[in-house]
Image 1 (cartoon, rainbow, N blue to C red):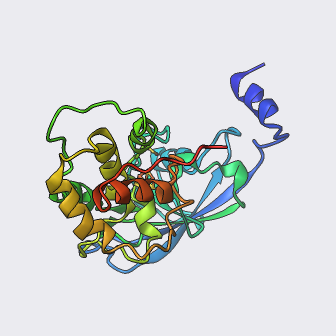
Image 2 (cartoon, protein in one colour; image 1 turned 30 degrees about the vertical axis):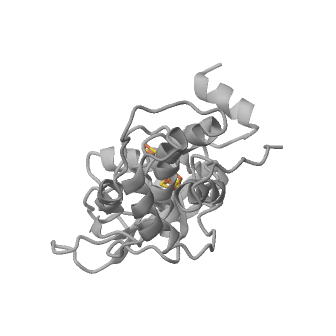
Length: 260
Ligand code: SF4
Ligand code: FES
Protein backbone atom coordinates (compact mmCIF):
# COMPACT_ATOMS: atom_id res chain seq x y z
CA UNK A 1 0.00 0.00 0.00
CA UNK A 2 1.42 3.37 -1.01
CA UNK A 3 2.11 6.10 1.58
CA UNK A 4 -0.76 8.36 0.50
CA UNK A 5 -3.18 5.40 0.46
CA UNK A 6 -2.17 4.54 4.02
CA UNK A 7 -2.74 8.12 5.08
CA UNK A 8 -6.18 8.22 3.44
CA UNK A 9 -7.12 5.04 5.25
CA UNK A 10 -5.83 6.36 8.56
CA UNK A 11 -7.79 9.57 8.12
CA UNK A 12 -10.96 7.73 7.23
CA UNK A 13 -11.25 9.74 4.01
CA UNK A 14 -12.51 7.40 1.32
CA UNK A 15 -11.88 9.17 -1.98
CA UNK A 16 -9.97 12.37 -1.60
CA UNK A 17 -8.03 12.07 -4.85
CA UNK A 18 -11.11 12.92 -6.90
CA UNK A 19 -11.88 16.15 -5.05
CA UNK A 20 -11.39 19.27 -7.09
CA UNK A 21 -11.10 22.71 -5.57
CA UNK A 22 -11.52 26.23 -6.80
CA UNK A 23 -9.00 28.42 -5.05
CA UNK A 24 -9.82 32.10 -5.27
CA UNK A 25 -6.93 34.41 -4.49
CA UNK A 26 -7.18 38.10 -3.70
CA UNK A 27 -4.47 39.62 -5.88
CA UNK A 28 -2.89 43.05 -5.66
CA UNK A 29 0.61 44.46 -6.09
CA UNK A 30 0.64 47.92 -4.46
CA UNK A 31 2.73 50.30 -6.52
CA UNK A 32 3.22 47.65 -9.20
CA UNK A 33 1.56 46.69 -12.46
CA UNK A 34 -1.47 45.36 -10.59
CA UNK A 35 -2.41 47.99 -7.96
CA UNK A 36 -6.18 47.30 -7.79
CA UNK A 37 -7.41 44.30 -5.82
CA UNK A 38 -9.05 41.62 -7.96
CA UNK A 39 -9.88 37.97 -7.40
CA UNK A 40 -8.32 35.29 -9.57
CA UNK A 41 -9.46 31.66 -9.37
CA UNK A 42 -7.38 28.52 -9.95
CA UNK A 43 -8.39 24.89 -10.21
CA UNK A 44 -6.63 22.45 -7.93
CA UNK A 45 -7.11 18.67 -7.80
CA UNK A 46 -6.39 17.24 -4.41
CA UNK A 47 -3.40 14.87 -4.57
CA UNK A 48 -3.50 13.45 -1.08
CA UNK A 49 -5.66 13.60 2.05
CA UNK A 50 -2.78 15.47 3.73
CA UNK A 51 -2.94 18.30 1.20
CA UNK A 52 -3.04 21.75 2.69
CA UNK A 53 -3.63 25.23 1.32
CA UNK A 54 0.18 25.60 1.33
CA UNK A 55 0.58 22.44 -0.78
CA UNK A 56 -1.99 23.74 -3.26
CA UNK A 57 -0.25 27.13 -3.55
CA UNK A 58 3.11 25.45 -4.12
CA UNK A 59 1.69 23.19 -6.82
CA UNK A 60 -0.12 26.05 -8.57
CA UNK A 61 3.04 28.20 -8.59
CA UNK A 62 5.13 25.28 -9.91
CA UNK A 63 3.00 24.87 -13.05
CA UNK A 64 5.20 25.53 -16.10
CA UNK A 65 2.59 27.73 -17.74
CA UNK A 66 0.30 29.10 -15.11
CA UNK A 67 -3.24 29.85 -16.22
CA UNK A 68 -6.24 30.75 -14.10
CA UNK A 69 -9.59 28.91 -14.03
CA UNK A 70 -10.70 30.79 -17.14
CA UNK A 71 -7.59 29.79 -19.05
CA UNK A 72 -5.96 33.23 -18.92
CA UNK A 73 -2.20 33.46 -18.28
CA UNK A 74 -1.46 34.26 -14.65
CA UNK A 75 1.53 35.45 -12.63
CA UNK A 76 2.75 33.20 -9.78
CA UNK A 77 0.98 33.95 -6.50
CA UNK A 78 3.04 35.88 -3.97
CA UNK A 79 2.90 34.28 -0.52
CA UNK A 80 5.37 33.36 2.19
CA UNK A 81 6.37 30.01 3.67
CA UNK A 82 9.35 28.27 5.17
CA UNK A 83 8.93 25.23 7.42
CA UNK A 84 5.59 23.91 6.06
CA UNK A 85 5.23 22.29 9.48
CA UNK A 86 3.44 24.88 11.60
CA UNK A 87 6.71 26.00 13.15
CA UNK A 88 7.72 29.33 11.58
CA UNK A 89 4.45 31.28 11.25
CA UNK A 90 5.38 32.63 7.80
CA UNK A 91 2.32 31.32 5.94
CA UNK A 92 -0.29 33.21 8.01
CA UNK A 93 -3.20 34.41 5.85
CA UNK A 94 -7.00 34.52 5.73
CA UNK A 95 -8.54 31.23 4.61
CA UNK A 96 -12.24 31.74 3.92
CA UNK A 97 -12.03 34.84 6.09
CA UNK A 98 -10.42 33.05 9.05
CA UNK A 99 -6.86 33.89 10.18
CA UNK A 100 -4.94 30.63 9.78
CA UNK A 101 -1.64 29.08 8.77
CA UNK A 102 -1.78 27.83 5.17
CA UNK A 103 0.35 24.79 6.07
CA UNK A 104 -2.11 23.88 8.83
CA UNK A 105 -5.27 24.33 6.72
CA UNK A 106 -6.14 20.88 5.41
CA UNK A 107 -8.18 20.86 2.22
CA UNK A 108 -10.17 17.84 3.40
CA UNK A 109 -11.61 20.04 6.16
CA UNK A 110 -12.49 22.92 3.84
CA UNK A 111 -15.29 23.46 1.32
CA UNK A 112 -14.38 22.96 -2.32
CA UNK A 113 -14.36 26.68 -2.95
CA UNK A 114 -11.67 28.41 -0.93
CA UNK A 115 -10.99 32.14 -0.76
CA UNK A 116 -7.46 33.25 0.21
CA UNK A 117 -6.65 36.80 1.27
CA UNK A 118 -3.73 38.53 3.02
CA UNK A 119 -3.86 39.44 6.72
CA UNK A 120 -5.47 42.89 6.96
CA UNK A 121 -3.59 44.34 9.93
CA UNK A 122 -0.19 44.53 8.24
CA UNK A 123 1.08 46.48 5.20
CA UNK A 124 0.59 44.51 2.00
CA UNK A 125 3.69 43.50 0.03
CA UNK A 126 1.70 41.74 -2.69
CA UNK A 127 -1.07 39.12 -3.09
CA UNK A 128 -0.96 37.05 0.14
CA UNK A 129 2.33 38.38 1.52
CA UNK A 130 2.37 41.09 4.18
CA UNK A 131 5.12 42.95 6.01
CA UNK A 132 5.07 41.77 9.65
CA UNK A 133 8.38 43.38 10.62
CA UNK A 134 6.46 45.54 13.13
CA UNK A 135 6.38 42.49 15.41
CA UNK A 136 10.21 42.29 15.57
CA UNK A 137 10.41 46.05 16.00
CA UNK A 138 8.00 45.88 18.93
CA UNK A 139 10.06 43.13 20.58
CA UNK A 140 13.19 45.28 20.32
CA UNK A 141 11.40 48.38 21.59
CA UNK A 142 9.96 46.71 24.68
CA UNK A 143 13.49 45.56 25.57
CA UNK A 144 12.77 41.88 25.27
CA UNK A 145 16.05 40.47 26.37
CA UNK A 146 17.50 38.93 29.51
CA UNK A 147 19.36 41.30 31.79
CA UNK A 148 20.85 38.39 33.79
CA UNK A 149 21.28 34.67 33.12
CA UNK A 150 17.94 32.85 33.11
CA UNK A 151 16.92 30.84 36.16
CA UNK A 152 14.54 27.94 36.23
CA UNK A 153 11.73 28.53 38.70
CA UNK A 154 9.39 25.68 39.43
CA UNK A 155 6.40 28.04 39.70
CA UNK A 156 6.95 29.59 36.29
CA UNK A 157 8.66 26.85 34.23
CA UNK A 158 5.39 25.82 32.58
CA UNK A 159 4.67 29.43 31.54
CA UNK A 160 8.18 29.84 30.13
CA UNK A 161 7.76 26.66 28.10
CA UNK A 162 4.31 27.63 26.79
CA UNK A 163 5.46 31.12 25.86
CA UNK A 164 8.52 29.78 24.03
CA UNK A 165 6.22 28.07 21.53
CA UNK A 166 5.16 31.42 19.98
CA UNK A 167 5.73 31.37 16.20
CA UNK A 168 5.46 35.15 15.72
CA UNK A 169 2.81 34.44 13.09
CA UNK A 170 0.68 37.49 13.97
CA UNK A 171 -2.68 35.70 13.87
CA UNK A 172 -3.47 36.96 17.37
CA UNK A 173 -2.89 40.54 16.14
CA UNK A 174 -5.20 40.04 13.19
CA UNK A 175 -8.17 39.45 15.53
CA UNK A 176 -7.17 42.00 18.18
CA UNK A 177 -9.48 45.05 18.23
CA UNK A 178 -6.72 47.20 19.78
CA UNK A 179 -3.74 46.36 17.57
CA UNK A 180 -2.73 48.53 14.62
CA UNK A 181 0.65 48.20 12.88
CA UNK A 182 1.25 51.95 13.26
CA UNK A 183 0.09 52.08 16.92
CA UNK A 184 2.11 51.57 20.09
CA UNK A 185 0.11 48.66 21.55
CA UNK A 186 2.04 45.47 20.76
CA UNK A 187 -0.68 42.85 21.39
CA UNK A 188 -0.24 39.21 22.37
CA UNK A 189 2.59 38.65 19.86
CA UNK A 190 4.83 40.64 22.23
CA UNK A 191 2.99 39.87 25.48
CA UNK A 192 3.60 36.11 25.06
CA UNK A 193 7.40 36.35 24.51
CA UNK A 194 7.49 38.89 27.37
CA UNK A 195 5.84 36.28 29.57
CA UNK A 196 8.73 33.91 28.78
CA UNK A 197 11.36 36.41 29.93
CA UNK A 198 9.34 37.49 32.97
CA UNK A 199 8.84 33.84 33.92
CA UNK A 200 12.60 33.22 33.76
CA UNK A 201 13.37 36.29 35.88
CA UNK A 202 10.33 37.09 38.02
CA UNK A 203 12.35 39.01 40.63
CA UNK A 204 13.57 42.59 40.60
CA UNK A 205 15.37 42.28 37.23
CA UNK A 206 13.95 43.28 33.87
CA UNK A 207 12.86 46.70 35.07
CA UNK A 208 13.10 48.16 31.53
CA UNK A 209 10.91 45.38 30.15
CA UNK A 210 8.41 45.74 32.99
CA UNK A 211 8.08 49.47 32.38
CA UNK A 212 7.60 48.94 28.62
CA UNK A 213 5.19 46.09 29.34
CA UNK A 214 3.00 48.39 31.41
CA UNK A 215 2.98 51.11 28.74
CA UNK A 216 2.86 49.09 25.54
CA UNK A 217 0.83 46.04 26.60
CA UNK A 218 -1.03 46.39 29.90
CA UNK A 219 -2.40 49.88 29.32
CA UNK A 220 -3.42 49.16 25.71
CA UNK A 221 -5.13 45.81 26.21
CA UNK A 222 -8.93 46.09 26.30
CA UNK A 223 -9.21 42.54 27.78
CA UNK A 224 -11.49 41.46 24.93
CA UNK A 225 -9.52 38.17 24.80
CA UNK A 226 -10.31 37.97 21.08
CA UNK A 227 -6.85 36.40 20.72
CA UNK A 228 -7.64 33.59 23.11
CA UNK A 229 -8.66 30.81 20.75
CA UNK A 230 -6.77 31.73 17.63
CA UNK A 231 -3.20 30.67 18.34
CA UNK A 232 -2.00 27.84 16.04
CA UNK A 233 0.61 26.88 18.66
CA UNK A 234 -2.21 26.33 21.17
CA UNK A 235 -0.93 29.04 23.52
CA UNK A 236 -3.57 30.25 25.95
CA UNK A 237 -2.91 33.96 25.43
CA UNK A 238 -5.41 34.92 28.17
CA UNK A 239 -3.49 32.84 30.70
CA UNK A 240 -0.15 34.23 29.46
CA UNK A 241 -1.42 37.80 29.85
CA UNK A 242 -2.62 37.06 33.39
CA UNK A 243 0.81 35.63 34.29
CA UNK A 244 2.85 38.48 32.85
CA UNK A 245 0.47 41.16 34.17
CA UNK A 246 1.10 39.69 37.61
CA UNK A 247 4.90 39.76 37.16
CA UNK A 248 5.20 43.13 35.39
CA UNK A 249 2.40 45.15 36.99
CA UNK A 250 1.60 43.60 40.35
CA UNK A 251 5.18 42.34 40.88
CA UNK A 252 4.27 38.92 42.09
CA UNK A 253 4.27 35.39 40.79
CA UNK A 254 0.78 34.17 40.02
CA UNK A 255 0.14 30.55 40.87
CA UNK A 256 -1.10 29.03 37.66
CA UNK A 257 -4.44 27.17 37.85
CA UNK A 258 -3.91 23.41 37.44
CA UNK A 259 -4.67 22.07 33.99
CA UNK A 260 -7.48 19.55 33.83
S1 SF4 B 1 0.80 34.03 20.44
FE1 SF4 B 1 0.13 32.44 18.95
S2 SF4 B 1 -1.09 33.58 17.45
FE2 SF4 B 1 0.14 35.12 18.54
S3 SF4 B 1 2.03 35.38 17.34
FE3 SF4 B 1 2.47 33.78 18.89
S4 SF4 B 1 1.98 31.84 17.85
FE4 SF4 B 1 1.01 33.47 16.61
S1 FES C 1 5.30 27.55 6.53
FE1 FES C 1 6.05 27.66 8.58
S2 FES C 1 4.19 27.77 9.74
FE2 FES C 1 3.46 27.48 7.70
